Image (cartoon, rainbow, N blue to C red):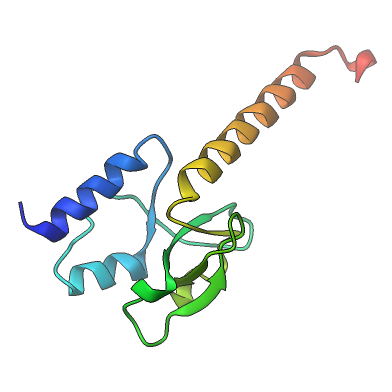
Length: 125
């Protein structure tokens, strides 16, 4: 297996428990660089999406139009692609697993609370 495919495979395995996806633009960029993102779901970032964006550290950026920011968790200097600017959470790859786990737990708790409220008789609501 070539090194690029192996690196992508390792990344997917690292974050496999989450709902990892990439944008169409990122998929196109990866394919152009020789690493097609086979098997990854493609997502469109809209204003209402609660998207977590895992960002490279700034010194790892690859494109001249990369955007620069700070990881919202640890404050590391990160970069991201311009088409991903709408992502609600921008974190470095080190913080990504914890943030995704916390957001998934929060989402499950909200679903459980909504389900509990739906099961109550109308007089209790």
